[in-house]
Amino acid sequence: MSLVIRNLQRVIPIRRAPLRSKIEIVRRILGVQKFDLGIICVDNKNIQHINRIYRDRNVPTDVLSFPFHEHLKAGEFPLPDFPDDYNLGDIFLGVEYIFHQCKEDEDYNDVLIVTATHGLCHLLGFTHSTEAEWQQMFQKEKAVLDELSRRTGTRLQPLTRDLFGGS
Image (cartoon, rainbow, N blue to C red):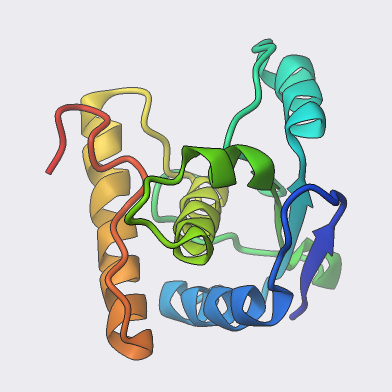
């Protein structure tokens, strides 16, 4: 099904073609290429507004995920009853925030892919509220990013590698 990437900001340049091709690979790795997915790139002002409304946190952030299938458990696949249910949801990427959080030795476009992968895992029911949940999500992200790295010749690490004293 379709992958829609919208760039609703003008602060940070977005290279949509490489983002699209890598996200398509991630979707295939996860086995969810038959599901619609929206990725929306926004600036700090807009991600902060969304974060305040939906998470009651009045700060910009890197990624917010809004699953179409809200009650999935980690690793479950949606079981659509109707064609319109072949939808994973939307991922909002705070690209300005992500850009400013990049370390000197990090490639912004790689961090964007890692962050989008993190958001996609959230759409599939993974969370990181507890150390046990984080461990499960970390392992899934690591497996996906390792395979993506193998296919694309990069070295990508999970977003939350240091969340609980990490790997």
